[in-house]
Length: 210
Image 1 (cartoon, helix red, strand yellow):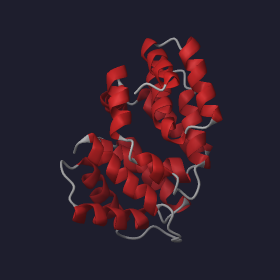
Image 2 (cartoon, rainbow, N blue to C red):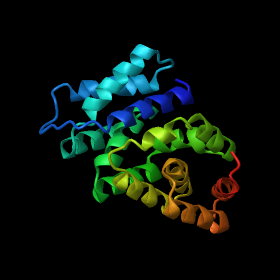
Image 3 (cartoon, one colour):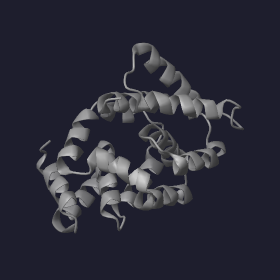
Image 4 (tube, rainbow, N blue to C red):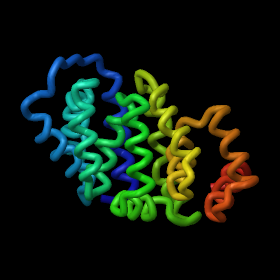
């Protein structure tokens, strides 16, 4: 799947997070939904039918709250594709508490597979800004999320990490939820981050250059 199509699937998922569904327990077909959604995100091409199917599945997948945390934690830890990691990570970000957020952050700091994924997306300054361009269509759809409070907390945790690539993850993903705290972090990163790529990306963001 191209980067643009991957971001498009994530955008569709974000829209359906606003639906008011309730679930006391995980549906029996929850693992199957995870597998199908992850495969859609990892696929090479997505047609209109696949996009609709993905949105329908996502509305049900994210209808759970605390009931889905253990499942998605396990799937995030075991993820071997960007689709698997993205789906489980997004669930933990939106529904998780500090415990789950710390787990996500630690995994990104130490797991070789996740770090290889991040390197492909924003491992260099050129990759960072190309991926931002590919994901532009996600920005307005994020505004439809029922709440970004917990997601912002995770992003703040990432950007404060001792690991340079994880800080870059917070810089990258935080761009679509940019607020005063985010831009304060960008200025600090541009001035004194010990990693040259992070400083270059932050300086370029401050200049508004894409």
